Amino acid sequence: MTEQQARKGSGIILLSFLVALMLTIVPLPGWAQGFRPEWTALILLYWSLALPQRVGVGVGWLAGLLQDALLGTLLGQHALAFALIAFLALRLHRPLRLVPIWQQALAVLALLLVAQLVVFWINGIIGRPAPAWQAWASIPVGAAMWPLIFYVLRGVRRRFQVQ
Amino acid sequence: MLLALFSILLMTLDHREHLVEPAREAVSGAVYPVRFLVDAPFSLADQLSERLATRSQLVEENQALRRQNLVYQQRLQRMAALKRENERLRELLGSSERLDTEVVIAELMRVELDPHTDLVEIDRGSEEGVFPGQPVLDANGIMGQVDTVGPLSASVRLLSDPSHAIPVEVNRNGLRTVALGTGAPQRLELANVPANADIRDGDLLIASGLGGTFPRGYPVAKVASVEADAGEPFAQVTAEPVADLHRSRKLMLVTGTEAKDGNDAAAADEARPSADGHEDEAS
Image (cartoon, rainbow over the protein chains, first blue to last red):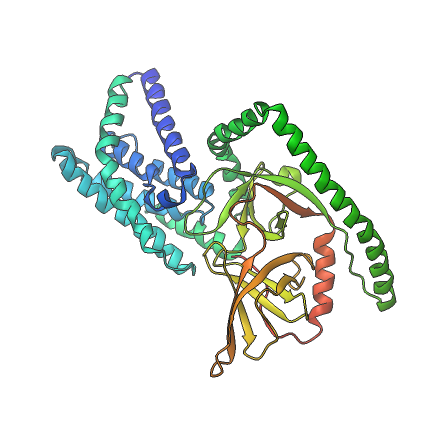
């Protein structure tokens, strides 16, 4: 891999995170708010499964920190959650690559659940009220989005030969 | 592992000490482009619809605004006289409180923040002199206070946020209490109102100026329901904010020397015994 290729690939990865962060704060109509998937976490999971040597805990932490700043949450809250799921994804990326897509989606469901639990747990520690049940809806929605994200990002990755 | 420890440290500092305020401001500045990109299509659509408005619509709007302006002018004339009278009376009483406030107009950015809190983003930041704790109003009353500040934008914590409290008094009789956010969009709860207190449906609650964050006298909420159970020491009182917390697009930030005056007023008020030990803060 030449240096130029590496730079080009990084641009694509950065762009995908930028789009994910934008989707995270795009206003939605009231009824749809609970169903907004954790776009940043999904993108992070894709890249850390596909390119574990390039995207990992550090990138996840940074993306989480940016999301914290965007959402006005405690600095480090999403950073910790995303670093944790990136770590788990790195640990699991070998078996996960071999299984069919719907089983991957189940694993993604579990990882998103972990991330959400960390966020809610920290909210609980600092005395925020418990989330409404609708707050959990984003997790199955996120897992359902996984095939879409997987195929779109794989298309992008092959098109621009990010490796 | 190191990163995990670091994030825990960061969170603790952010939560307890507000030591990382400069870091937060820097990161907030770094993500401003993302916010801008999300907001841009909406502002563009607004501008376009303004450009493409028909002449008759504009004429109609103009006339309506003129009429409204006339009404406000007339109120202002009386206000000037009343203000002078009030100042004279205050001088007689030896009070240092001033009524003048200056405001900066800010506009809401159409981005959504943490779904579990009531925060909104405005398009003014520390470059325009916005500071944490600055009171935010809309055309009808108090909306909330500035929470965190970035260079070009700031987030505002609304009155309805569960961690927000504002000291208020009943306009009719000066009964002091604290209005707490509940997380529901148009509902506040009043803390520690005695069951036999003189408070009714429809009473206007105004900011009492205690705590020094909010200037005294701005309308906050209207009492919506009072449930006094004879067996309970406190009445259950809910109130509805007069500001359109989730609809207003143009906001006003109260600037200038007001915060200092508010402190003076608060210090003066705190000398007297008060019914509540709360102070307004959003943490």
